[in-house]
Every structure is written in C-alpha cells, then in structure tokens.
Picture 1: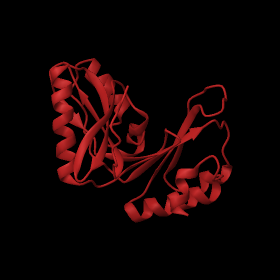
Picture 2: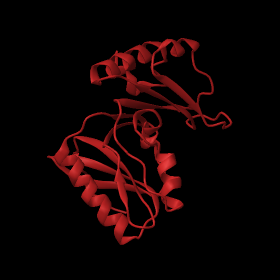
Picture 3: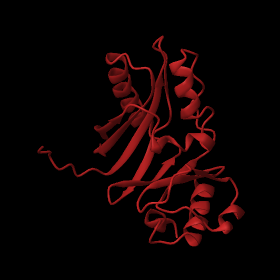
Length: 201
C-alpha cells in the first residue's frame, strides 16, 4: 500500500451517532495526541465552527450512505483549514471516552439508544474535558485523587506492556482550568509512561 505523506497540522476526531430512523447527533471535535502511533490524549473544548460543520457533513454522507446504526468515529487530519479522513471506526471510540464526564449524554448511552432505535441524547459539551490513556499500567498514584473533576476508568484487563488498561477523564470549568489540572496530573505521573502530558508542565 502506497500512501502520500500529509504534512498535517493536527489530528481531530468526530464521534457521532445515527439511529435506525436516520436521526444524527454529533459531539464536538476532539484534538488527539498520539505517541508512537497510539492515542495518548484527547481534548474536547470549544471548536472552530467551520471545521465542525465540515466534519459533520462528511460524517452524515458516510453514515447515511452505509445506513449505519450506532456510534461511529471518524479521525481527520487538519491541513490548511481542511479536513482529510484518516480513519473510520464503526464503534464507540477511545477518542470519545471524554464524553463520560464532558458531554450531556455519553457515547456509550447514545450507542445503545441508536441500536434500540430510541431518540438520541444531547451531545452538548457541558465542560472542557480531556481523556488520558493508561497504557501498560495497572496502578496509579493515589495523589491523582486530590485533583478535582478527575475520574479513573479501569477496563479490568490483565497487565501487558502497551496495552490500553484504562483511561483518566479530567474536566475544567473553562479551558484554562482544564490546562491547569492537566499540568497537575503531569507533575504526578511519570513522563516515560505519559509523555503527551509533558506539554502542560
């Protein structure tokens, strides 16, 4: 497989849902940070409306053409104000885990609503929220629990290097407060296991 190199500015992802009646619902775009090709951090906050509209139009075209039912995730490269599709995941997605604490209705509930042909819940961003992947670790410092609006979600998997063992969601009343809390987390967690957080130190 030969692919053209894309000098993209960043990667963003759109999580959306479609029920059997064709009702669509979209979450705000989240910005993703990868380390060694694995998602490390997703941040959902106020987004560029033009990019959001682009993403929603592309999502609608794909989901309607496929007569898709459920939650669908689309990853995009942003290049000069335009979005290029990078990956399509027909399921609830890691980059949408922030919805558990940051959205009116989380992606898991909306997936069930879609599959059972129920009205989809509000996807409104209720507060800026970040998701931090826990890779290959089955224990975290207790000091994290001193940070407000922080929630740890474990998957109950057996520990293995690089395996997605769980995730941390942290929220703030605004972007500045979220970044402050990400800095607090970065000061507690080891940089070798959580390198994407170091930009907040």
